[in-house]
Structures are given as C-alpha cells and as structure tokens.
Image: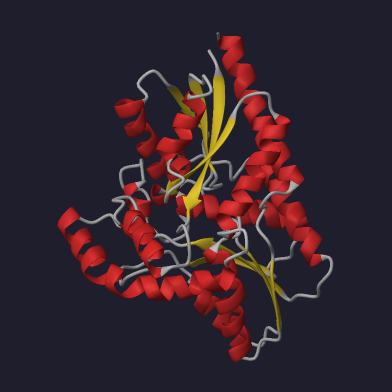
Length: 345
C-alpha cells in the first residue's frame, strides 16, 4: 500500500487585508472545538460581535509580522516540509486546519500521487481539543466524505518524546548561551479550563488545582493539555539543568470572560518586571513555528509590557521552525511509521 505523510499546522489568512483576516477568523472561531458553545451562541458571538470588531485589529497585528514571502507560519511550514521531503522516500504534503491551504487539498494532493495510507502529523507537541483533536476530527470527516479508500494514522502528542525534548532544549540553550538572563518563562497557548475538563477521560478526577498534573501514571494525562505543558517545562528544565526559581510556566492568548489556564503570560511578565526582574527570556513550546502569537503577542507586546514596568532586556527564543535537527526528528518518526506498517503488512 502506497504511503504518504501530511504535516498539518494551524493556518493563516491569505494576506493582511481585513477581508482575508475576517474570512480566516470566521472559519477558525466557528470551529466548535475552538469556541465550544452551542451553535446559536457561537454564531451570535463570532458573526454578531467578533467579526465586526476584531478583523481590523488582527489585520494590523499581522501587518507587523508579515514577511515579503507571506505569512511567517506558512513560509516556515513550507520550508520544513521541503526539508522533511528531502529526508524521506514517500510523498510529504502540507496542509493547514484553517485557511486556503485546506486539509482537503492536502489529502487530495497525496491521493493524486497514488497514496493510499496517510500519516497525519499535527504540528502540536501537546494535545488539545482546539488543536490536535480538531485536526483529527476534520481529517476523519474528509476521509468519510471524499476519501473512503484512504487509511489514516495520526501521530500522537510528542511532548514527552526524548528526541523532541532534546532538540527543543538545544534550541533554547543556543540562544541562552549568548545572553545574560534572570528568568526563563515557558509560555504556552492558553485554553479555557472547560476544555481540560472536556478532555478528561477519568470521569472528573481533574480538579484544576495544578496537583493532579504531576501525579505519575494517570491515564487522563494522555489528553490533558495542562499536564503536557507542565511536563514539557519540567523535562526541558531538567535537560538544561535549570535551577528552581529561575524558570516558570504561563499561558497566553485568552479570549472572553470564562476562566482560562493560569497564570496568564501578560500578567506574569508584568509581575516579574514589577518584582525587579531586569532580564527575562521567553520560549513558546506550544508552537513549532513562529507565528502571530510568538512574533507579535510575545516578541512585541510582551516586550512592551516588560519595559513599561521597569524590565530592561527581553529575549524571545525562536520556535523550532525549520531547524535541520527538527526536520531529522520528523523524518525519523516517519521512517519508524513506514517500517512498522511495512512489517505488519
């Protein structure tokens, strides 16, 4: 059976024009796994309020970080795909969950090359309902409707894979060795607390108190975004030999008034500056490619907050992007999948 791989990331507007941004945001925010409220309420919120106010502001933010080649997320993802393709012997496609580089187009491109079995790789180290799960669900819907003959396998969350921790730690240490810093902040994309509860397969054992995240051997951790973020920080800190008190975890990009995972990144940056931290470094391990959330929200807005409260040096650490060692790891995972599938056949 002919095999292929599809790398999948979040997506991006086609341009910084508010009309393109509005179209993209509409698709993104109407996803029931992103804003998980009844359809009537989601429609009222998104189409009645957000899409009438947010596109211009978001377009201005995109304009700050847009490259000559296009969206940084798209450009970086294409570079990564190219490097991965050079390292493997099967077709490698690229798609986005939202936007014009759709999952349907990505799957179709592989089918057109004779692929019958696809390894889907959601480019998210940690599992979340609004990231990995929505990709898996959409792929399954597309398979049933348009590609019934395809066999689909999805790569699970890889936050705890030693080789991933190794390359993430290397990317951080390469940046830190050239600077003087007092605190390293691990900032992850935020999700509403209810998303954690909805992904809880333990029938309510998750208390959202931060304690169960660190219990060993809990089956619910397989789908607990908060646990996987906390453990990513711990694994990297151990790998880098960071001392207690010199690093911490926070969550960014909250929306609305419901409680989201805490502590919040913007308030953490502000608090640390007020407490006298003068030199801060920040890394964003929920993303593997730099995008609006890392280049504008963290590198620009975060730095502004830090400086306003007395901070002096604010260093942002790039995502893995298209690093050669990251492409090597992805290629190795693909090789392993091909080998296992071939052996089974």
